[in-house]
Amino acid sequence: MMSWQPVQADGLEQILTLLRQSQSPDTQIQRQVQARLESLNQYPDFNKYLVYILTKLTDEQEATRSLAGLILKNNAKSHYEKFPDDVRLYIKQECLLALGDRSPLIRATVGILITTIITKGSLEQWPSLLEHLYSCLDSPDINLCEGAFGALQKICEDSADQLENAPSQPLNVLIPKFIQFFLHSHPKIRSHAIACVNEFITPRATALMSNIDLFLENLFQLANDTDSDVRKHVCRALVMLVEVRIERLIPHMQQIIEYMLLTSQDSDDAVALEACEFWLMIADQPICRDVLQPYLDKLLPILCKNMKYSEIDIIILQGDIDEDEHIPDRIEDIRPRFHRPRTRQHTQNLLDHNSSNDQLSNTTDTNNNSTTATPPNSQSDQHLLLDDDEDIDDDDDDDDGSGGNVDQATEWNLRKCSAAALDVLSNVFRENILPILLPILREMLFHTNWQIKES
Image (tube, rainbow, N blue to C red; front, top):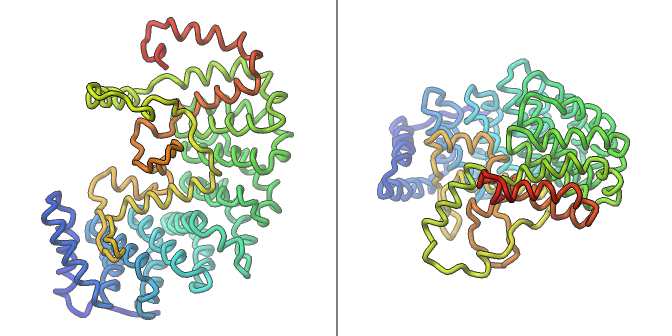
């Protein structure tokens, strides 16, 4: 094991001071700190100092420690191949030792750093990693188990192809292990385990397809899990399975449809959104008419109810009105925006994860050599880091080629997904849905609640 200590105590304190100052809201101070941090990057040991702060200074503020890790992640992303061998070795060693840190924020930062190293190099260049993470899963220390699972989830998101094609075939061992943890007593572990396996549904990984029956058996046991993240991943798995292995679901289709009807009304909008994706996916399948026909009288009212404007929608719409009511609408402002390009969920998850990592990091310079990162110095920032693969969705294209940023008003949400599902189902069932749909629409159009009427 490599031992290293800061050579100069005042050098360590200097870096800590800069990290603390970088959390100042004063942009002038931030620019000064950025310049000083960039100048430190010329010293090979600077990255050792950063990982030392991240992993060793447990009495330091979480935000400062995490910021050191994110700066190191940016450095690795920009020029990991130029790191001296001893620096690479020390970073890897300390990351593995910090997986069980008592802080969820630090564990998440370590996981991001690990997956960045893998994407910049390869699994073969870190041969002990997967074996170490695998062994940590059985640890009685829940922090260590969760930290290892968090890192594995990020690796599965970012390096699924490497895992699938590695000569050692690690998925043959990992997939059954992940499935085993579906029934773990800790909800965060269950959530990580399902999310890991979900990354291999769309690519039809051989190791998963050979364990598909065990996967489904354990997945169905989580249908009514009390944790919303677990239910969300269950819905996501079923949606992807409709696309790639629907023949495995057909014997259970009645129960799945009834479950999705219930979950489409979940009190957690993120769960309900995942469930509503099921109706979009099943509409593309040849069995759609046969399996959904008996449930239209239950499904259509749910979709219509979900089209009601939420409180957040109303706030956003009111803000838009206040800002541009005097400006004439453009064509792209008024054309329908219900449908987003429907990409595979695996790709979407990868984009979500990359988007969140980049938003945690400060913008790099044009040469991609910046060493600074935006500190998670608020509760919301810390939340984004803890759930970096879930909470930031990448911009949905409207196929207009504009490349502009998409604001909250155009983001994919439960209301838009429900409207899109109603649209595609109308194309499938055509006039057959009118006896059910027209009375619902009539009631909504004449409803005294304007939020329902305008939906």
